[in-house]
Length: 156
Image (cartoon, rainbow, N blue to C red):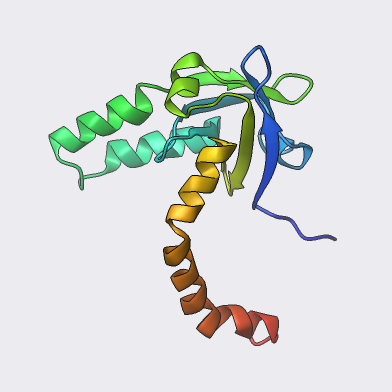
């Protein structure tokens, strides 16, 4: 039994027909009908249909949003969503409205974070990471001073 990663990233490309190749190691989980919409940052977000149903249910059941917040949330994420399907060669079509929002041209990063895929313009993703480098370092230091090194030593 090997390690199963629910996270990871891989370089990919947007082809001439606006499809992104999904890495083989992610394809087992992301099969059949998928939902694509805008990500929180300028990227595309892809979920399984079960993940999408949970996403919509959380919004529908939530009482933390006021009417204006709910409207903008629906307009940005829910109303932009489209159903797509992984083709037999492992590619997902990126609708033009999502492609423009995410600035997807040719070079892409495909990032898996548990039950979601994020498709980024490669250069934009590097800028995003660079802008947040200090925050990432602080988080690593906080975690590293506690739990990460205890895991390494077999104490957790």
